[in-house]
Image 1: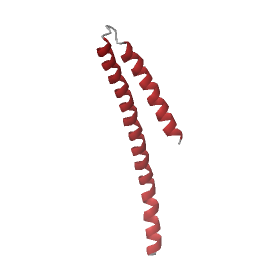
Image 2 (image 1 turned 90 degrees about the vertical axis):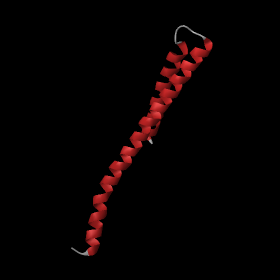
Image 3 (image 1 turned 30 degrees about the vertical axis):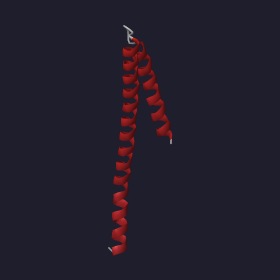
Image 4 (image 1 turned 180 degrees about the horizontal axis):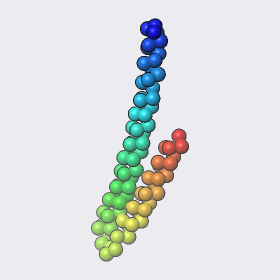
Length: 81
């Protein structure tokens, strides 16, 4: 093979691996983002319940569900880009 053809072949072989790695990084980042959103809203709900002195975790439940919906919305929005 000519050197130019060998270089072209090497470039073609590297592209799928780079694409796979890029996709992996993208979806891993989305998972961390979802986890942080859910954690932050749940933690906020716990703190509000402690400050308000509620016996039942009203804000914890509300904010954790809101966090799950916000995380799903964010993930779908990023996924469709």
